[in-house]
Length: 198
Image (cartoon, rainbow, N blue to C red):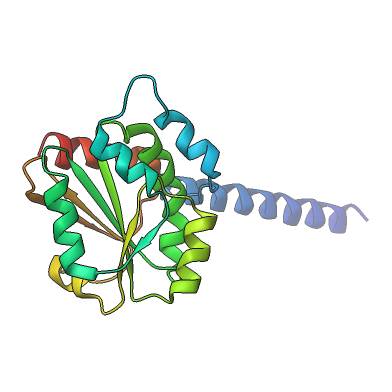
């Protein structure tokens, strides 16, 4: 009678050890948890005066989550207009799972840093209706330029989505990050390293 009881207890202990070990292994690998989408109000609240927001950045905030047609010519024009500010450009699409994963981190950081840093989106190879739904679900306090034929993506040389480009205040492309950000902190670090101090 005692032997089956000991075997059962031993098997149960082994299962507990395996579950704890697997959970710790996942934490050690730094597996990221997806963020939670912020509402329009939550995103815009830190960007409200006072203190005043520079007019060119306030103009971006006024176009929050809008999709702007024009592809590469409009993208280049926007970058020229934003000279004098570091610029962070996030390339995304509604059909891209990793893009949706990182958008809450983009929301958080663009809301925090949008008084000094210009943010832009590029909606790549997307269906406009689906893109509008995604932009409404993950409100961005900046517009996204439509890139239906992936000309902007080709110009930047990205291999896939998502991707994030970092421009210095003088308009130099300093760094292109391929893949999704797994935390807001990692995005903040790259903004400081490449856009602000690049």
